[in-house]
Amino acid sequence: MKIFVYHTPEEIPNNRLPGCAVVIDVLRASSTIAAAINAGASAVQVFSDIEPLLEASETVEEDKRIRAGERGGRKVKACEFGNSPLAFTPENTEGRRLFLSTTNGTRCSESVRNASKVIMASLTNRQAVVNSLATKRPGTVWLVGSGWEGSYSLEDTVCAGAIIDGILAVGKTPLSKLAGNDEAIAAVSLFRQWQDQLLELLTSASHGQRLLKMRGKADVAYCSQLDVLDTLPIQKGLGIFVQRKPGVIEKTCEFLGRLVGRKPVNIPAVANPDVEAPAPEAKAEAKKPTTSKKAAAKVDEKAETPKAEAKPKGKDTPAPKVEAKPKAKGPAAKSLTAGAPKGAAPPKAKTEVKPKVEAKPQAKAEEQTFFSGS
Ligand code: MLT
Image (tube, rainbow, N blue to C red; front, top):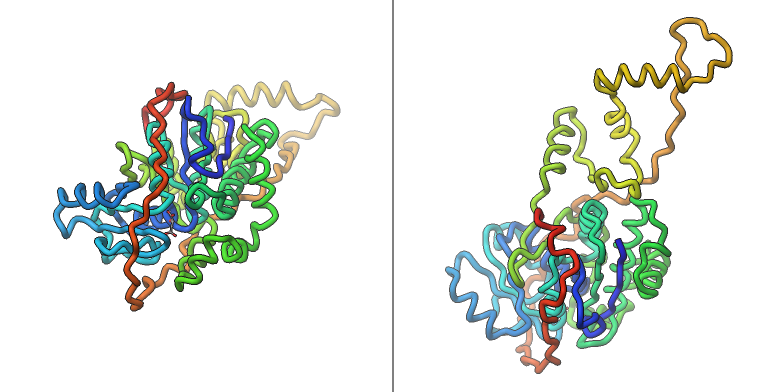
């Protein structure tokens, strides 16, 4: 697996596509999409323009849809919602399709929509993205920041760094081998520098500042949380994102886990030498030799244990202690989701003319067949 970081959609190569494209718009589009899907949205359909959004939304009954639009950080008049992740609660979102258009995030998503696999990433669902990439290990991954109208966004690059750092934590592949470009290494360094002060970084970033001036403090605080959602929005049909359904292996492991009363585990890549063995308890589980194995192990034991001195019957050599790798931070629903930004009547938002970024033609997709499953 090679991971490339592009700070804005304008930087991505225009003659090829990755096995997996990861769209990042921490402030706020990808955080909003993860929050809406976590609140039970049946799907999120993204548009770079408002008109096609309004047209498409007319094909869905009113009580089965939500329309959300943002320009310049403010709500678009024709839509019920703006782009605040705090606006989407189970009460107003469960079972509805969200039609969303924003200044940069949805435009970025359109620029890579022809890739075999497209995931939405933010700081809130970083671990879910890491688990998917570490499990599926696509040959080439693009982490694409949405930026702000073509310019660099600090918060998107720190999120790219957090994802790579998470993959390094569950694998043995060194950064020098994993990084596909220098931007990837720089992103990891940025994350390691700021990983305990993400809120401070987001409030110092230019778009964070912009949102704070529009009373977006709660949104910035919400978007700065790390690994609080176990949600993975994945593209199913051009521009349509749904929650990724756990694969057969994950379901089986979770079922087995519940069977023996264990909390669901994060599934590292299966049968991939590069990935460190799962946590000791899982290892112990895996170690419980089946009968034939038992016989084989006996043979081995006999073979392995140096015939130094004949030991009295029944005394076994204690198994060497396996130091468990510090686990990456676990997802937990934290409390910043309470309540949508209430009250303030948003000022009229001007529809801005945006630089058109053509969706990259269906160039030779590198890993077409890899993701036949989810
Ligand atoms: C965007 O897509 O540009 C952002 O999400 C804008 C915002 O809503 O803050």
